[in-house]
View (cartoon, helix red, strand yellow):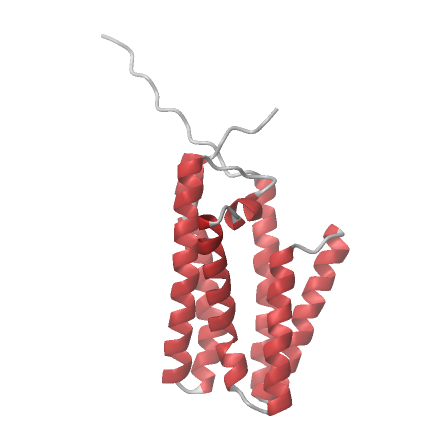
Length: 199
């Protein structure tokens, strides 16, 4: 009887990439939690200012730890500052409510259109700890772009359909949970298409 050939074990996602992803999630959730608590205690407009300040502080902490600020968090912080400024300056809640629409829509289009024009944003985000082969990188790019655009559309539906307090719960807790589930769901794809570590 011929011996069975054991299936080749799939490579594990590098621990360094997992740690970086976890730090990024924490740095994003901290300002959102501050926004939620600020809303409970002070109302939406003051909470928006707290959100902007907490986001800036999060970027500053990231710089102190890593001595560099990645471009995407910096753009995101800039958008938070812009929409928070409009919300506070004009006393109009609509601006902070459409911020997730604009941010997710912008990044979703940047990921998808960037691929078409040779700018591989997903590849840059994964580097340097993680490198995928061409089919895996293309599949992940399509998934990320579609997910972000879907989030933008979903935010439009939610903020226009429910009272402010329910939109805030959606923004702070539901979207964070969805993001975590989406990222966890990409691990099998990443493991299938990881390239061997370079010597």
